[in-house]
Every structure is written in structure tokens, then in C-alpha cells.
Length: 82
Image (cartoon, rainbow, N blue to C red; front, top):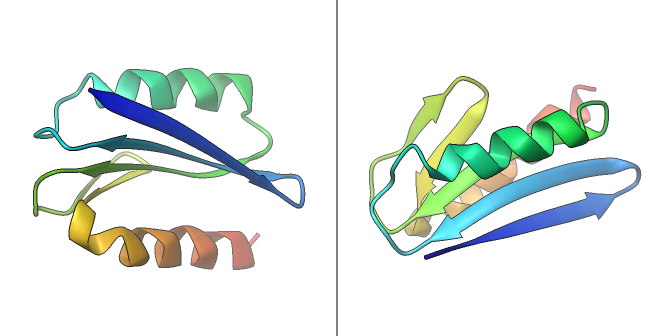
């Protein structure tokens, strides 16, 4: 089971998929859909899952639940460079 969270602030959007499960490619489907809908506004996408291996798939950050602060820093840094 996963939950998708969209955060909008100052005309910018961050979309996250949150899950306690092991990462699988199905988590990326919702992210890709949102990215198509909000292409001009989205500044970051990420997956937070129950594991501990951090990785990147394309422009999507994938982090274990213990590294949520790291994911938010990456997205915030990206926003500052826009």
C-alpha cells in the first residue's frame, strides 16, 4: 500500500509516493502521471519506501524512510536553482 502526497508552495509542486513496502517500479507510475499533468510546475518527485537503499531513477529520488530529510534537502536545493 502506498500514499501519494502533493505539496504546492509558491506556484511550485513537489510530489511524493510514500510506502512501507519494498520499492518496486509501480511506485513510479503515479509520479509519471503527475509529472505529465503538472509539467511546468513540478520541481521534484520522490519515493519514500520501507527500505534503506537510496537511489535515483531518472529525475526521481528514491530514499528509505530514515532519509526523508535528505530527500527534502535535494528537492529544496533544486528549487533554489530555478
